[in-house]
Amino acid sequence: MNEIISIEDLTFSYNKNPVLKNISLQINEGESIGILGPNGSGKTTLLKLISGILSGYSGKIKIFGKNINKFSRKELSQTISYIPQNLNINFDLLVETIVSFGRNPYIGLFKGLKKNDYIRIHNAMKEAEITHLKDRIFNTLSGGEKQRTSVAKSLAQDGKILLLDEFVTHLDPGHAQKILSLTKKLIEERHMTSIGVFHDINRAINICHKLVFLKEGKIQEKIKPENISESLLKDIYEIQIKIIDNPYTGKPYVITK
Ligand SMILES: Nc1ncnc2c1ncn2[C@@H]1O[C@H](COP(=O)(O)OP(=O)(O)O)[C@@H](O)[C@H]1O
Ligand SMILES: [Mg+2]
Image (cartoon, rainbow, N blue to C red; front, side, top):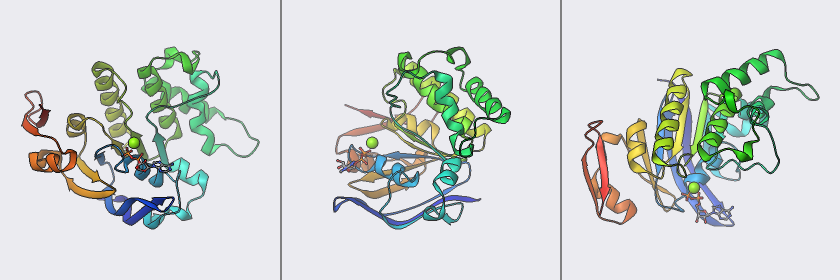
């Protein structure tokens, strides 16, 4: 299996306050990794470091065997897409324009979009099922439509790695489920590798190959979803938790009082 992301002994502080401590993690091609842990445990910070949004860490982060310090900004954004919890746009931009931003890492200085870029933008909108929304103002969309636009932008970006930060947390269960299934399908079709931060443990169990539990900036456990245990979850979240079999999937299902 090809190793796509390799993190070795990563430590990071905001203003001398350590937030991630000695993180080591290897992720192979095609894997979907779920990052879980209480609020403030460093999940978002980890995604921002991998995507190159944050720097000033100690340790190593390698993508395709190459240290991310050695990537140009453009090269990095051709490789990694980061979908935040909420995409905030301060202007009245059309959905199609937002999706077209996914092509920015490929456009030369003072050059516009080419035919090939438009083809990719339209295909991405089709795959994310937002073609009918292309002339709408992004800020007027529903939460689910906004997240599908984010997915389309990432598809247009054509990277191999997708980072998703709690990207369905604010959606109702029906939309969350639909968008996650669609995203999972697109990730698989495009042989992408993904790291998702999850608020909901059961969703992570359903769609991830491996789960990484963070607590107070340290990795507490890396396991396959089927090996999740009540004692681990009790340690991480400090509440009483029971695990039952999910009657739909046969996978573990976590319930709280
Ligand atoms: N820009 C920042 N400046 C200072 N501290 C920050 C900043 N962003 C996050 N933190 C702190 O870092 C810790 C981890 O935050 P974060 O990575 O957002 O956690 P999570 O995503 O797991 O909730 C928290 O204690 C948070 O307050
Ligand atoms: Mg976060």
